[in-house]
Image (cartoon, rainbow over all chains, first blue to last red; front, top):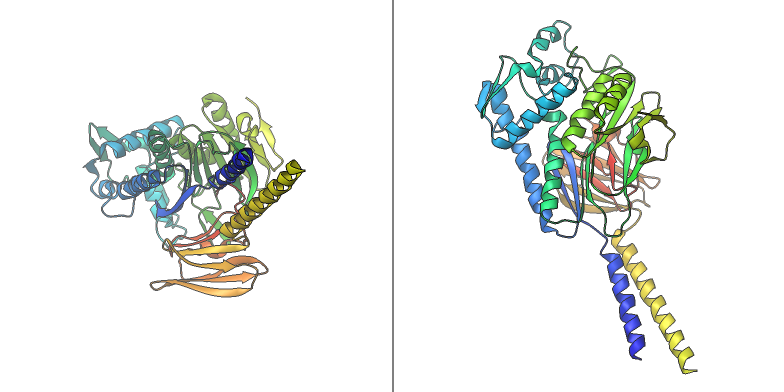
Length: 328
Length: 117
């Protein structure tokens, strides 16, 4: 009889354990996107991370009048908080690494196309060339805590802020001893640890032709930052022509090189975010060369014709599609 | 004889518990349904097996949701960018989101842990 009740108790414990695999979840609208947070274990960690994300929104928004970036863009010179100054230094670093393919000073171009507002339109041909004089990280001076922008130069952390936020939130989760969590910020995903049941993370990559569905999947264990930049993410049509939001800092026009999306996988969310934009601007050939030189990230390229190219390390995680592997 | 008796009782109990667990799990996820959130608040759970039309309003802004053939989509919206209207009809996977109107349609059945959009 005793044995029977012991076995029964074990069965009940097993069934209860099966039910505890469900994560705590929270949705937030911030940083110009929809953010979904999931954490297994300590629910309180969610509140702290959500507050952290809101603080980045307050500091880094280009449109909020009380943000540091807005104030810097308006005045041309302010003392940035330590964290915003740190992000700026990282943005300058990645801009130099990519020879300006990623550039945090593209905001004058973004405004000219209307991508920071609700209404977009093609700028007049004479509008863009003078704006190119304001583009480039050599127009930024960082003197101690004070940041000075050349006249006309304005910052936009849109190509790096979400990746940075994801990376900092990962650190925050890890400090709090969270075993597993996942942050999804639109095209940015950050996994932390491994799920309690030991199963792999499964991350879909949007089909550029039908972004609500996946064209491929990535399966892996552990912490990883994944960021996709795609021409389908934000665009408008004028006179039957589609214009997307990824602008070439060298020309001021949307990049047209046959790429539909670039997904970067890296340990650092900040790097993954900056490089996903940079590789898109570079195009497949130059981006492949950059990957061979850097060896600090992996990437998946989807072309407008639907063909997929994956670097060696990314190919190991990729499934559900046909692809060509890029060798070192 | 006594052992056999206990084996039968034990097997029956396991079956009952397993059945109850499956029942409660299914009830918890409410498959073939979608949860509609407006500004972070759950407005309703929509049964996707029944065709219908729903209006969700937030202040002066609004979204029209339609359920047709087991899938839900945004048929019209007051938002400027119309991204939500471009989202294909869905019954699972990544949520349908209207960022300007703070509307989210989430599904019980998730295909992935996250979708890189």
